[in-house]
Each structure stands twice: as structure tokens, then as C-alpha cells.
Image 1 (cartoon, rainbow, N blue to C red):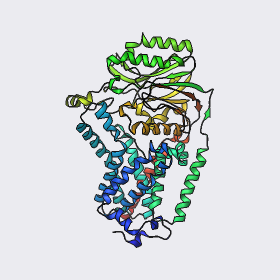
Image 2 (tube, one colour; image 1 turned 90 degrees about the horizontal axis):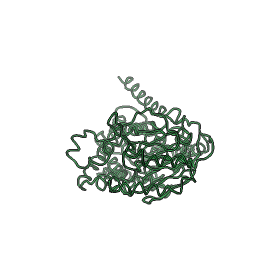
Image 3 (cartoon, rainbow, N blue to C red; image 1 turned 90 degrees about the vertical axis):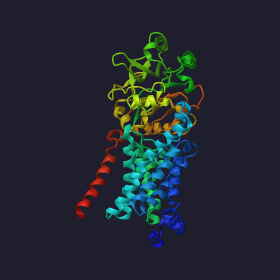
Image 4 (spheres, rainbow, N blue to C red; image 1 turned 30 degrees about the vertical axis):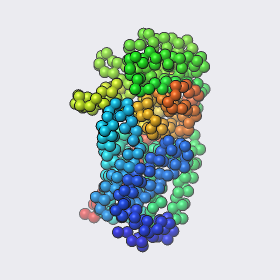
Length: 524
């Protein structure tokens, strides 16, 4: 048990919390329930809440700090494991609840099956935080680390390490990294240097400062220095303008997912996009249609529909960029693709596919057992990872389709040669849930990390243009057929993050592990 004397330190921020309340949070039978609640509160710091009011971004520090307090005072690894797991269940139970919408509403699965699959996904994701809790307690018990070293260094390092693992394990799901809400704060200035993982480390450090036994004046000074440095970094312009701004029109068709893939809907969909684009040909430099705007293979419309669009694009000197499925006769594979018509045409094939959405692991088994896995276009193949950049109006462009833009390490590979970014998405699968807002927040972070402006065209929202600071220049409403217009500025130059990627964070992992190894050898 934690004594009052152990909790108190002159000037510590913990002295503002009554001892009985601290003991209730840390050691009462209800502390496990509190771990679940702390996790459930965390998504309130993310979009859409922090876009309504940036103060929501700062909410993240308090449940995180209290959860870290629980971990640091856990009596054994079992307690740390289960509190971490419950925290993760609360976090993802609220944060990725939108998965149920995709499975039940648009996947046509019974609500019991949809609930079961969503619950299993949440439980598995929560294991990351269970391992985190176990590791924190194990290190505390096994190594003679100073409490502040554990609280202010090792816990942030382990947390970010678990986020990094989540980026690539089982194809990766780097969703809801705790650095993302900081895009609404002065701390966003660190993103072009350290990326979102660096922001996550800073969030954990500041959360730990709230509950660490450190004098109040020291805590305040550290927080002021961190925020002041972030504000200064925000004033640095990491890239410079190249050429004139381009006029962009993004067409948001808002075709309902329930009928989009129906053959009877095809002609209506084609007519919808043609009609919405009609008045834009002579006004804009680029017209952009979203992911799989016309849900039929390119070769079936190549010499008719797409040929006419190409002719119109050349006549008006307005390039058309669109997402579409492409079938390869040679390999008998089909791809989720992007192409541009009217200019130097090229194709980009999506490389990072959505498991169970665009391809099905163990497809022969699962498709025979569950109808849900027979969704339209759920058998895509992945494109080559080293594809040449698409050229739009003479500018090389980094392209991504759907959730590919959440993988920062993939995006930055071609940034030095690019002038802006374009992402085509279909968030219609998730209805009016948190998913489109969370996804847009991550897309904005890519613009900030790379200092490149972003064109983001979606089927039903959020369609927007984002500047090199991650700020929204113009955006359209969700669930409306609309054309969103604006300008983007091609840019050149790279940020430190583009130059060195995640290597500083990986080096931090290595040094932390090396120090523990040295301690172990010294004890032996």
C-alpha cells in the first residue's frame, strides 16, 4: 500500500489531491474500473471533439496521468497487466466503436456477429496496453531505477514502443496514437522534427509530470519550456513555394455505400460525377474524384467513358484525377488504383490494403463461413512498393489511397521528390461515426510532418485542402453531394522528420534497452 508520506513531497502536484482519493484511485477494488474509465475518456481528446474546441486536446493529459499513477504503484505484474488491458479496452472500445458500423450496417452482418467481431478486435488491441502495464511493473521490480527515471523516461519509451509495434504488427493499425491530438496545440511544432511518435513521447512525459513526485516549480518550468519551444518551432517554414498555386475542385458524390456497388446504380453514379464536374472544366487546373468513384474496372470503360473524359480534360487543360479499380489481364489480379486523365497519365496501385476490407486472410475458409467477408471488391492485390510518382500538372505528387496516409514512414519515402500530396478515400463504410474525423486528423498530421500541402478527396466526407502546417484551408460538409474548391501551393524542401524518419525514436528504444542490459550485467 502507498502511505501518505510516500505520496507527499513539498510542492508536488499530488498534494492537491486528498490522500484518500489517491488511495481510491490506486489501490481500491474500484481501481480496475477506473482504469477502464480512464481509457474510455482518452478518445475525447481526439477528433471530432478537439476540432470543436482545441481545449479537448489537453484533456488527454489527465486520464493518462492517473493511469500512469496506477501502473507505477501496481503491486505485481498481474495487476499491471489487467489494469493495462482494461485501460486498452476502454480506449479502443470508445475510439474504434465505428468498426461495428462497417460490419453491421454496410457488411450486412447480424448485430450479434458485428458486436462479437468488434469486441474481439478491441480485446486484441487492448493487449498492447496489457503488455505495457506488465512491462512497467516488471522493470520497476527487477531494476533499481530511480522512480523519476521510470516515470519520466521508461514509461514514455515503453508506451511509444508499443505504438510503434502496433504500426506494423499484423499489417499494422497505427490508429489513435496519443500524439495526434497535439495537432490542435502549440506542441504541433515538434511534428516536423520528431513525427507523431515524438509527439506521443512528449504527451506521455507531460502526463507523467502531473503525477510524478517532483516539485511544483520544476514541473511548471519544464511544461513552459516544452510549450514555448513548440510554439517557436511552429514559426519555422520548413519548405518553400514552387510555381503558382493550382486551382482544385474536389467532387464529393456521396453515393450511399448500400447501393454504390449495385450494377443498377452505375449509370446514375457516372452521370452524378459528370454533372457535378461540368462547371469546373474551364475554371480549375485539377478536378479530383474520390476512391473508386466509378465502381467498375477501368478496362470496361477505357474506350468509352474514360476516353471522353480524357478528351474533355485535354481540351480544357484541366487534369482529372480519380480513384478506380484496375484489372490486370496478365496477372489476373485487380488493384485499388488512382490515375490522372488529360496530362501525363500514370497509375498508382494501392500497396497497403485493409485486412478483411480489401483482402481477406485465409479467404477460402472465411468466405465460406461468413457472408460478411464477401463484400464487394474485397479481393484486391497489393501494388509494388516502389512505384514511380504520379505527375499532376507537371508536378510529381505523393499519392495514397484511403488509410495508407496513416503510415507516416511510407509517406515520407517519396516526399523529397514531390511537390504536394493527394489522398483519395472512402470513409462511407463508417457512416456518421468518429472514424472519418479521426482519419482526417491523421491526414493533417502527414501534411504537418512533411511540410507539404494536401488534397483530400472523399466519397462522403471529409473532403478538404490542408496547408503545409496541417491547417484546413477549405473543407466540405459530410454526407452531401458537393464540389469543394480552393487552391494549393506546390512546395519543395524537406523537414528533419522527412530526412531522418523514425530513427531518433528507434535510437531511444535502443538506448533504453541498452541501459537495462547494462544494469542487468552489473547485478550479475
